[in-house]
Image (cartoon, rainbow, N blue to C red; front, side, top):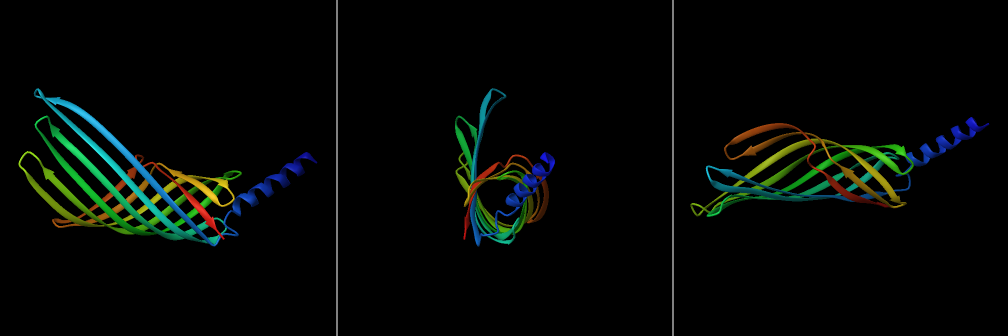
Length: 203
């Protein structure tokens, strides 16, 4: 009898977990990331330092095609700033990135209201890079078009009936960058892009 009750409870819990998008028309979400690094070195009695700061934000809108699956559009904005040099000069590197991607996302229940998910996206982006050389008082600007396919695992927690918290750390990406000096391809497995965000489930 107890085994039967436990089996019924398990089936009901899994059914409830899998049905998170059944009454949802659209899912509005967003992921954000911030990072900062700072290093110092002494080379030939010359004190040098290097620091970077980065910020990214990716709002998205998705449509459920199944009770566990979303397809949608994602915009992206990222800002990367780097400074390096010594006491008498500082060079700066500033990169702005804008992107648009389509994605497919699938959810799997772990425990009640907690889900593992994986997300696959393909998109294009525009990057503007500016270099400021303080030592020789010059500036260089370059533009790049990039194309990227990304697969990212993550965890989602349904904290309210119409709200989920989302997080991811690593993933794999393959990209092509079309620069002024030619094209380059890149395959990258990364664990240094922690992202946290939220989703609103709209009826």
